[in-house]
Length: 123
Image (tube, rainbow, N blue to C red):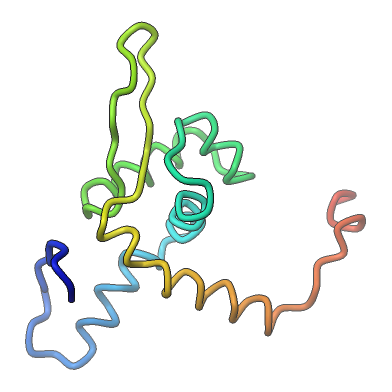
């Protein structure tokens, strides 16, 4: 790992620990999508991020951001006091997940059936 801060290992000595640690960051339903949007769009406010992550509720987005912030993947910055406006951005650790998220996206593009956008909008 580079100069970024390292996360504590809860399974030291086990050969699968690094896989489990990575999966805990990107294995939750919305985490990789949030990380992807912040990678591609840059820092975003809460409402803008919710628009970018189509289908996520405010509650789930808030909980996901709290979890990613606790795991040092996302930072939260207060941009203005009145009205209160916050901005979410990836930390250096979060930015280092780019190859992982890109690999997930590439695998999905290669192995999932193409979505018929017109049929999907009727559901």
